[in-house]
Amino acid sequence: MIDRNDQIFKMENERSFLESTLNKLIATIGPIQIANKRIMPFGWRKSAKGRTVWRIVEEIISQNIELHAKELGFDEALPSDSEVGVYDFRFIYNNGKDSYVNIKSSVKGGKRNKDDISKAESIEAFFSNNKEDNLYVATFVIDFKEDMTIELVKCIVMPIAWIPDIYVNPSNNGNLQSADYKNLNIAVKRTNIEFYEEFKKGYDIARQKKTKKISNN
Image (tube, one colour):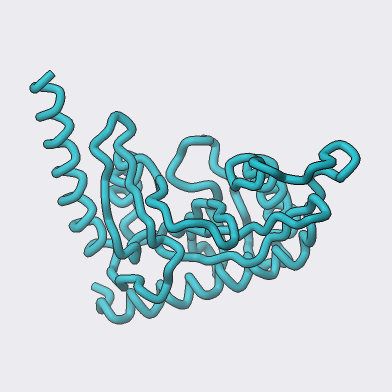
């Protein structure tokens, strides 16, 4: 049995490596031209939101991860087969070590919101079947520029096990949500087992609330 402190230490090293590597990728990609003043003469207006352009930016990030996988230090970078799965990439490196990464976006200077991380049932399945592997959220911070380009400012990598505000929404989607998944300063350094126990408590409460709501209708 690996000592708890060793597990936390290894997770921090892995987190740091992934964050450093994905920030190197940002430098490789550079500015992303989305439009220009000829076709959008009044600028971004209400379109200066992450969800407006994120699918394109996500595809750019994903293709460049695959293209530069070896240069970035990975043996393989395997995209998920599912668009709604718990992770977007499975990284293999260090002679078979796996890391699973969920890629998200955040607008520079945006408001603190409680965002969806993944469906709770998918989180439960992952940690039930992958006790030795770590799952991370990699948040790419984007900045909308006056020349109609988008700059990838930085990437923040947080182990899902360290999210400080574990909350499962009892709605039909049943998503794990967090407002602080980008804030490493208040991360709670748990092992996967410790997180799973906390998560299951929240998931049970959400299911009870959902059942009660259905029975009252």
